[in-house]
Length: 186
Image 1: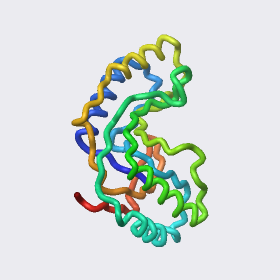
Image 2 (image 1 turned 135 degrees about the horizontal axis):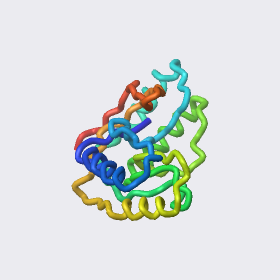
Image 3 (image 1 turned 30 degrees about the horizontal axis):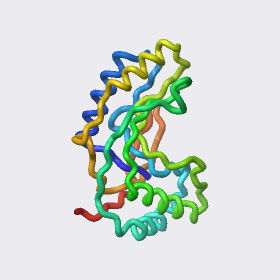
Image 4 (image 1 turned 180 degrees about the vertical axis):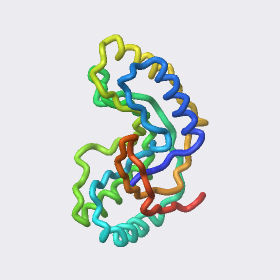
């Protein structure tokens, strides 16, 4: 399950990636902006027979949701700045997003899928670091991340959630929508 992003955040991410590519080493594999989304639940191998029931249960569970706003808050490194593996963009975490996560988690758990062991931390993965970086490269990266600002005009409206199927290819994952659930418009 995922939340898509749209303009103006897409352009903001593209310019951030361009800016960071100039500062950072070749060892970073940047996520194609068309593939960037907020993962609510990674399911793994979904049994096709479960799709109709899961879709109906999600529609019922999310029927009261109205559109809401998300805003980027910061850039960071996972798991930490000493041994970074992922460059991510954080977003504010309004109650609706956490509630969607809990509903989704419970529905998939009822169908036999494992629950997430980690705390739900919504974010956008911008790039993956493929080899250990030197101390100088890490300092350059941290300074570059600190230079990027986040202003209110980069906020996005969340009007639906999507269930995607992913297919790994040599050029990266390809996503195709299985179904989506729209929220009430305000």
